Length: 296
Image (cartoon, rainbow, N blue to C red; front, side):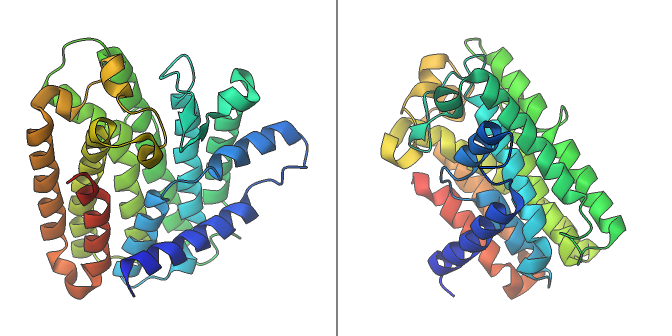
């Protein structure tokens, strides 16, 4: 199957499952549920869920096993975007080409919608009925892995250092910390979670962990580059916003050419890491090209 068809099919699976797992808009408190669904269904590439599914499939698992966990990851990612856009953080008006959550529902409801999505995600991960094909001990590992990736040692920690670095001089270790935690942590957790649910061998799990670490960092570098060379229709928000705010980015520190070179290096590292999987890693190789090569 061509990658484009694979992405369309797996995205449709995720979209349909998200619709099932999220509270309906008319259920009280209706405005909160509307706000949650507004941001979840605002578009996006569903990269994290798709990587989780592809990792599961690469080790012999099936999409049906991992779909609930993939949806939980997308809920966590969406919560982070809602909060990231708030005036206290990046103060963005648009996300994925639409008005940000707080612009439509107000800051208080946006905060609570993010809180509710995070809570909903962990409720789903703990649901033995939803994840009936996943043994209880594996569910516990998955919950622990995603909790660390989402918290102060992962995404939230990276966001704090990102805000602290804004408008200040920064070095390469700080920049890598921000990127590997704020963005890379959830991407890596998506892949390692997919491997866990799919029943990966120790060798396959190590290979996918190396792949995930490289892809996660490269993905954020690609986003940094697109903030300079992309357009609003492509990235869904104002171009050049990172530079205006003095954000810590690879192009700001190393220049555009070297940032592109670093993304290529990480892509090649990711591809090499998949060698132990043989042909089963082909889909993950295609996805790495898809999410990184968009900047070249």
